[in-house]
Amino acid sequence: MITKPVLVQLIAMTNWRAVLIGFFVIVALSVIGLIIPGIGQLLAALIGGFVAGYLAGGGLLSGFWHGLLAGSLGGLIIAILLFIVLTIIGVSFGPVTGALAGVAGAGTAAVIILVTLVAALDSAIGGAIGGLFN
Image: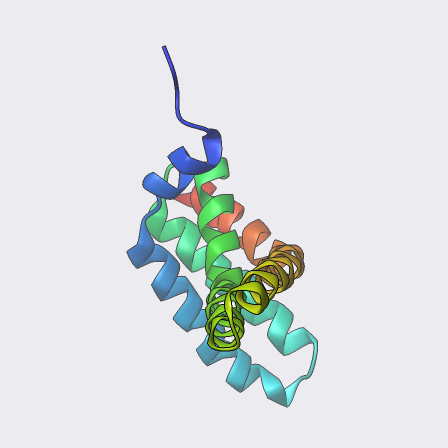
């Protein structure tokens, strides 16, 4: 029997409503958190991750996953858009340049996604705590 990879299963089981609400909580609290730089953004990430994990439920791992996605959603969107833009610009200069731009865009997107996921660990911790409370 062939099973789906774990990441594919996680994405399929993601409660995107919880992720979006957590993301918007992070954005709103980050703006307010500018009053206390550093600590304000940390608290915003923890609270937004908690909200995403709590709304998603399902325990520790589910809360961690939803908090991680809520904290990294902005970076993931930017990485995908940057890949698309670089590829389109490259294709406009010809097929060889398009292929090179696609590879460069994919590499850039991979680095952005990796950095974004590492930076969202505080949201993931908040999400894991929220998942435990639900």
